[in-house]
Amino acid sequence: VTTTDHVILPNEEGAFQIINSLGVKVAEGQLQQGGGVKVQNLPAGVYLLRTHSHTYPFTKL
Image (cartoon, rainbow, N blue to C red; front, side):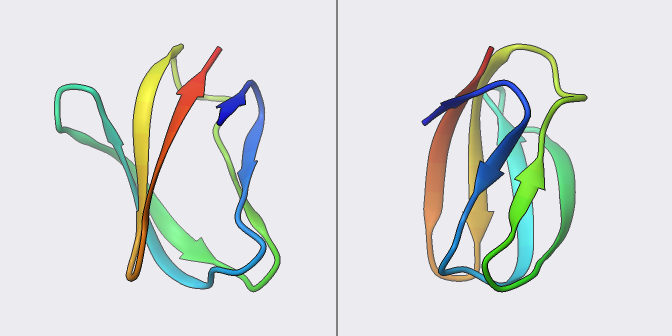
């Protein structure tokens, strides 16, 4: 996934973490069912968005 503002995860809810390419946690929070994660404040780069059941790679432009 490539994004500039947010990552939408329609089938996820609960805690999440965003990990940068160096393995450092840069954000965490709670997902609501059908919601998304705002990433506009992150610098451009490659990230992993981890939930309790999945890991989603994304690129922030």
